[in-house]
Length: 423
Image (tube, rainbow, N blue to C red):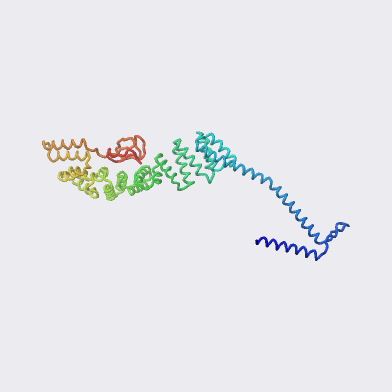
């Protein structure tokens, strides 16, 4: 309604202006050479308006003519984009259906219509891989990797190919480049950790590993590869702090402290490790410098004070008491161990030795010895280091099984409680 009123006002103003000009009168004289034309003012204004309109129409025509090639190009480009989008959709369907030949054809059409965009290149690479053309796929992935905004996609494709052909050094290098292109990708962090373990790069595996008990083993393995003594000692300290219950890293840390002139701190480390998880190797190092049997007995009691009722603690004190001639104390510890139900073969053999120490070569002593030896024959075997992958017993812990080359599968446990696999 408002627009209509505005138009009416403008129309009335225009008509009023025309009438005013007509009333004013006057003429416009046009002289060309000797010719002279006299035109009334209203007619002259009308001719001027017509001339302006014709000039405007002429300019519009030439402008449209000049833009015509660009419009035709835009139409052709829009048509190609439409065809490319349709081909892209058909290529996705072909890849999902597992028809590589159809996928390659449609990808070519999509690239013709859309050009080499990250989307078309990624589909082209996947189509080549599906068709078994790994070299062609590699070239396309390299094209992707050369694009700043699609570098991660190309590197991920190249990384998958390197893993597939088990080229671990190349895979590790590509994983690092991909991490630089897309920091913080969880999938990539897991891949890098797996590659570091395969490459036996314990330092990088430790850096990438999530917090947990596994860090102690990785820290110890990394310390074994570290040429710098100071850095190796720091890695051992770090591993012990991560998991005091892991006996190998506790032993390495304690030995490093002892070699550095800190025997008391070394013993404190062994005591802390024993409290966390008793292990016979800890006792061997702790009692190593005690030559006298009574001194060894006192040291054993000092070591186990944090967990005196543990089976390993009772066995250690019982054996130390037996060696020191304290048969009463030895029987107290060994009987308590048997009564707990956690005694293994070592406890029954120790009781057999105790009977010999108490009764000698008497009929009573021989009968008691035979009884304990029969129980030792059927008792659970002592814990040991064993590879959970191939089942081979090992003299000591190692990050890699010497026989089957499995990583992280050597555990300390009784044979019947060893896990079948390592997570």
